[in-house]
Image 1 (cartoon, rainbow, N blue to C red):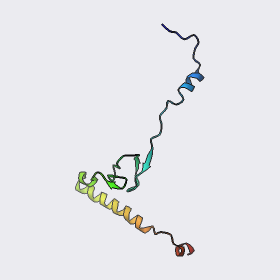
Image 2 (image 1 turned 30 degrees about the vertical axis):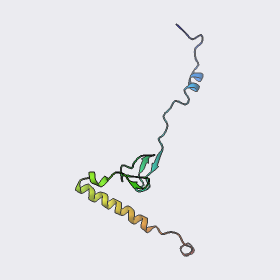
Image 3 (image 1 turned 180 degrees about the vertical axis):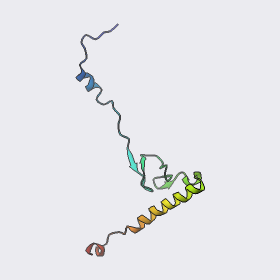
Image 4 (image 1 turned 45 degrees about the vertical axis):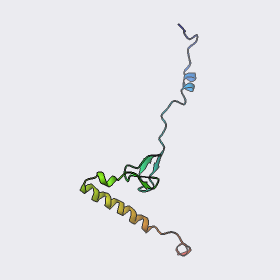
Length: 93
């Protein structure tokens, strides 16, 4: 049976295990709703992936939840409309 001739020091052991650790997942924001979502996955909040609707989220919800979700989406849309593109006239004011 093989046995080590010398004890492995803690420094050598730790250098060997340096790359063995948990890495943070690549979390991005959804382009449609702005919620955090894992990369290359469908957003669970709005059901969109790369600007295309993949899952109909409203279909699964109850009547009360549908109303709340519709209000939330409408509020998000109105916020986007309020932000106007910057023009030279607006910048000079």
